[in-house]
Image (tube, helix red, strand yellow):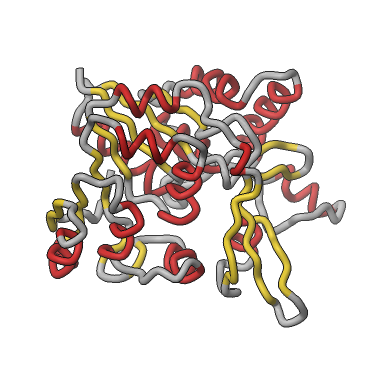
Length: 299
């Protein structure tokens, strides 16, 4: 049985993984999910990327949005707004709330996030082993200047409320220096027959996973081939605002430039046929590159 380990963020990674499971249904897939997007709202611990993978592969995702639950209602959100409770820019659906309540209760009882994620997946049966990158607290914060003085905001506020329209002066991974890989993370990389980097945001999805102690070294030294899929097609992200994140770290929004972020890890890199001109640039980095149709247009 082919053992595949993938490092994944939210929507792009989840949809890629759904296709992967259809392409190689008999494989053993472990997904290491980004938790630096995690945020606590209204006393609840929310893990957006883990939930997006779990819901997408488990058949509960809102297909139109790519995040949140299908057939969602927002009675609690409306009631919170009636009380004037903040923040109101992050909308939690009623069905989705149940997941966050269970997660928060289990964390409060002393279970680590990895054990909580396993318990939640018992319901959804996503067909993969879903591991958080770490059980420790890591949060992506963004330093912005709104005309007064620079201040740091949680990534979710920059992404959801500001729509990444206020340029990021810096992106900071709070707590990553002391974070350790969750149980099974390094072992899944070392035991893999192939390691995949799906088309997730390279700065705030894949980047935080690789920043956890030991993870980048494990990927670099695994005996398995490491293959990545460009999240950039024709010089733009398929969806989301990865270009704003790349600009914040001084990297061009192109398939070749993103490959450069992973060049020390990659054996292979796939770009879309529209970016065939990037192939020589990527191969000059010592990475085999192919231009193939990448855009997923339906399930």
